[in-house]
Length: 184
Image (cartoon, helix red, strand yellow):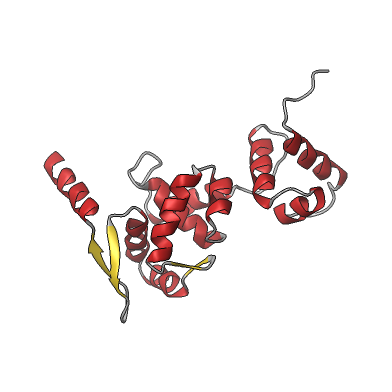
């Protein structure tokens, strides 16, 4: 029988899962037990899931894609700014941690770090969470989510927070809108 083409981390995760198949395990449990980082565990689990070695709940990427589809079904993975919207939604579903999000979503770490930097500097992300004030606004009106995502895309910036966030278009956002208008 041919041996599967797994790397050492994937093999260690798979063996650990096989030994503990009757236990409900988190990525943190696995990483602690086999002495690897949680991000390495997540990457290995995603790879094993894609290859059909393990079953499991939907990935964070799938959860975020499903949530975004419920908000706007016309916004698709080929839409401009889609990745930034997914990063923001995933941070609300799990945590606002760039390394974790890059590993969980399979996105380039530079992109996630750039979007994270924009969201942190604007106050949308505080520590490792989406600020409660922003989540409250999202619950009231989905447009608030899209405004925050536009900050992540660098199309808008927050210029005031009192009593609610006040947004202003950035020069890059203005150029993008002008280009859209010319196409119509």
